[in-house]
Amino acid sequence: MDAFHYATILARIVLPKAVRSGLYRWYLGRRIERLPSRRYLHEVILPALSQNGCRSVLFVGVRGYNRRCLEFCRTHQLTLWTIDVDPAASLDGAPGRHIVGDVCLIDQLVPGMSVDATIMNGVLGYGVDSEEQVNAAIAAVAGVTKAGGICIVGWNPGRSPDYSQFASSKRYLRPTQLGKLAPRNRFPPDKIQTDPHFYDIYTVVK
Image 1 (cartoon, rainbow, N blue to C red):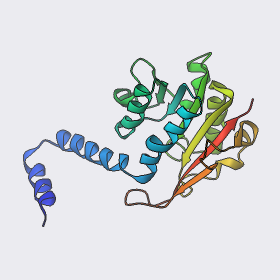
Image 2: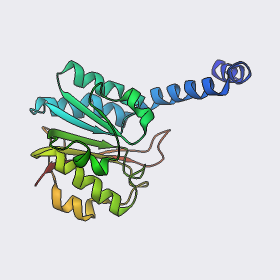
Image 3: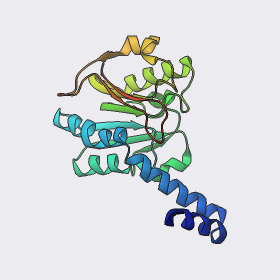
Image 4: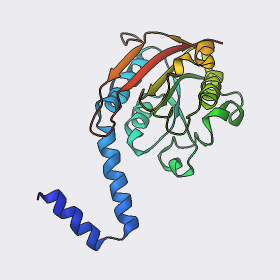
């Protein structure tokens, strides 16, 4: 038995359950942010957005493992908005520009919002599940993204149906390259996710 397992057993004996749960969430978050698909988001996609003139971003769904995305936006002067339906996610959201609410209603929650790009990663199949919800979410984010702006959808085919065939996708989204990035970028399953992960890049049409 290695040191990590000894530490785990000791923690179960010594630490209260709430503290153990917090430490586990922290540990899991650090593992998730090191996944190739997550690193690609903050090391490749965000720089590509910045290099192609993006100055404002809406990030749909936020947790501690998105902290590097927030750091990138702050250091590169990108105006960042975040939204999550879970009030607890406020701690990880963009300071002063975090919205607690349903992404399907964001165009109503923040009337007049207009951003250069929207990133909706790990949302489909994780709270936005039905075809009706997906259609509403895509229509809402398209509504707050500038015409000709970028919408990036990160999703797991084994977790979500093929949203690209839904009415809102066909109405508002057109596959596009972002600099040298292809319209679809695929990552194989990993130790945490048993399904492949896709990033689809679109231009928003009105």
